[in-house]
Length: 131
Image 1 (cartoon, helix red, strand yellow):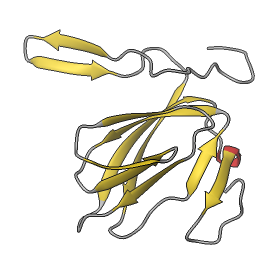
Image 2 (cartoon, one colour; image 1 turned 135 degrees about the vertical axis):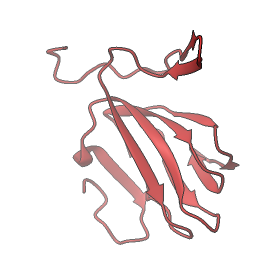
Image 3 (cartoon, helix red, strand yellow; image 1 turned 180 degrees about the horizontal axis):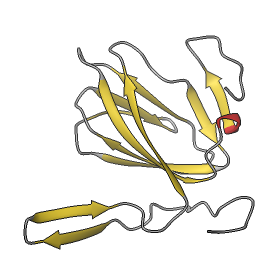
Image 4 (cartoon, one colour; image 1 turned 180 degrees about the vertical axis):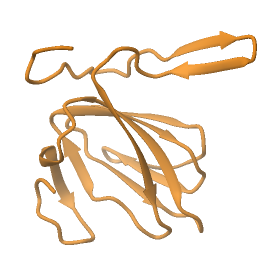
């Protein structure tokens, strides 16, 4: 494990390995790296704040149809299976535009800290930074 206070944050999405086995295959998104993995669920009609993070970059793997993702100024509707790279300090937002909850698997590279969030817009009147 690294003793650096801030783990390195990749500028580009790290390579994803496709590992084949007799029974099929699996995709390996992080191998012995300092990452935090979260499964986000967003209810219909809800969205996260428009936010950025200085201390981490994120790979979002969309698990359900109905996700709308904003990265920078680009907004797009995503389908299950899409993978999206969000560099550190890039504004981003996840919304559920379908009739059912959506899930996105987040692989965060760097130091995941709630205090690192900078909010530019928020539907819930939370503070501009942190929790």
